Image 1: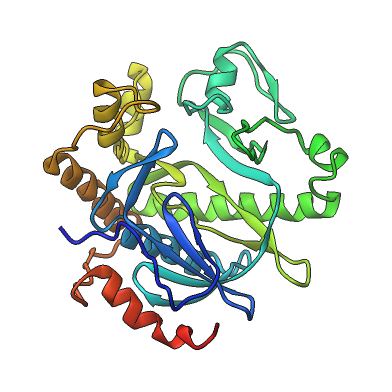
Image 2: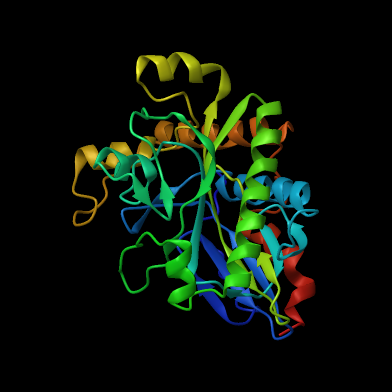
Length: 316
């Protein structure tokens, strides 16, 4: 299988390796972001999924191009299917999640908090009687702090964001406008593909002039929850979860066989890896309406990327 499990390129400067992406900061303020095929869960790398980095980069490209009239984004160029060249930004210290439904499983999701009996959260007030996965009267923003050094994200209200100096009132107003407008565009275009964009995460930063700019990725299957529209009504009435792009086969398989936070990870079957790869490819095709065509250039994916990034070797 052709996979990109690492993207070390010594000719490029200022290498930083994240869980999935590898970054190189150029002296002129540009950042090279390479999406590998690594699959991260339980605070570690489990395996690599063929075409995952390609899918994430090109799905985000589709959405960046479809929303650039709404909000400026960091993208400057795409020299390779796995690579984006972007402007280096100062990332804002607030995690932005927009939700259109009472859904989710994390400790900070609306559904989790609602089922604990909370009705006032994130500066919102929700009525009694809502059911799992019910559509909200209108999409809402559920901001959290961005945790560092192993901490946990904590829910925030707009008032707390401003009072704690995380954002100015003007920044919060602009960011909120962008986030809701991006989500509305995402829901509209997704509906045309037979999909429901349920919720999504956005990351924003500021450029050298202080402008708010959309960073990272947008509306990918890793940053967003999608449901198949034709499955929603029946599942909702039955109290079950609508059909989605379920990519957690590997995560579930590992969790059933060991303590993934402490034990060695057992060898993961090739068929399980390919099943997950198929989900990613299908997600790309459904979200964008385009066929997924792998790029088979280069002896390896890293060789291809190196060739495509050679013009940047002289920039350091």
